[in-house]
Length: 153
Image (tube, rainbow, N blue to C red; front, side, top):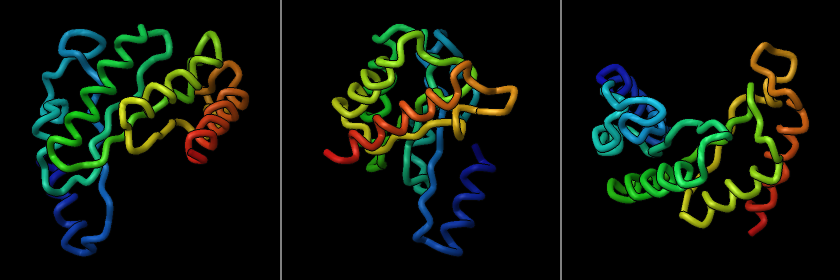
């Protein structure tokens, strides 16, 4: 955590307009991954004056909807608590949802819970790499279509 904060502080000293996002693991303590590392302490990260956006990592598509909902709600609450923007990620590589309609549902969930920003990794669904989703380009297109859909609102 010290390295992240120190680097961010130095960036802000050079150019205070730079926007810095810090992304922590999407955890429920012992479920999925644990919060034993310093940068997984959500309050510590969100409270830092050197980060502008509080973000939580990608969640595997096969995890239950209540997990998506809980992580998203907590992400938004934590960001608001410390006056940050909130950001949620979509898994755009390796695995894909069994039903691509889930992409729309998750984006709608994120929007309904007040997420400020959406992100996805990796570019083009990992097409041409060892991280590629089975239908990498289709996955990338569906994520993009849904981004456009919510941006028009």
